[in-house]
Length: 408
Image (cartoon, rainbow, N blue to C red; front, side, top):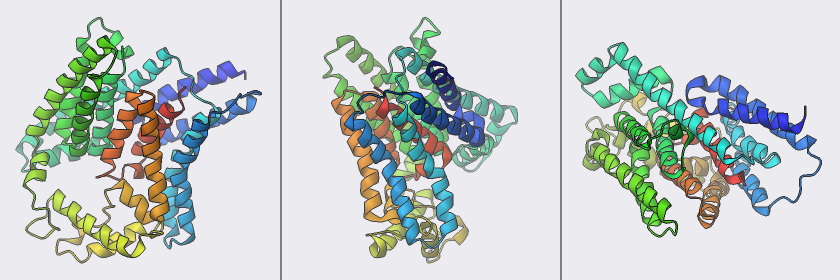
């Protein structure tokens, strides 16, 4: 097989991987395995690679280092089975950068548009199919009549799509960032009017609002405000005007969504105390999780508990609360930074934070607002979710992080 055909096959695989929101983790896993295999094969058949940029080497080391820290924690973890189960998922966080390092993307602008448009299309299908299904089976009637419509909608969405609302929210938020920052999307070019872009923006905002994805919405507001401010200092007038119009349009809709969000209202009205039989909302549960996390860190802040023992430690702590154990048991740290700290100690935490901070600095210096916004979205959402414990989050973050970083 010649190199050109290999690259074409690799690109086709990437197009199929972009449909990961709807094809399931099993098929996605197979496609990712083939993609890595073709990337390694492509590197082997290239006789002259030329000089490798130091930054690319640093990216490979940075993106893989949290996985190596988790491997080191196997030395002192007790629950080996749990640790190996987690590492089985985390390994893709090391394989994606390896694949892109060995065989850099070098995609044309047209190919990038096609990849982004495929991802946008997959998310549009998730929205349309799921809400059509809910309407078809009478789900909307049950949601409206429920005591807690927000919870019922989120549960119904997850039951049908197998996607957690927060992960869907992050995916939709990234779609919105693409629609704002990536010029002349191929999806929009199918039509002659730019209003299609605004229709898609409205569709994703409505979906975010209905799913009550709090942190993606809050992160989106922060990012749009930041981008809008930064665009005012842009030297390119047309681009500046375009960013301002889209940013302000999105900002108005997002603020409207936040205003009517029951889950945002819960954040405002919560007493921010550990859960009791009287106060056991989602915010109170998270405060209880945070308290237990801090208790464990007091005794294990240097090297952590080990990748396999964090959940056992949290569950033991949860028994001290007066709420039903079943309401809080098996809840993880709900903070990716604390997860790495508790699992792999200070070393793992520092390496993980560096893998986000340094690429963000490089993205800003290179005027790559799209990559910077992507990293900022995840950096904020990491504060309230362990996004990298599920395959959906690993694929979304692992693929695009490596894609942006190794793109020439």
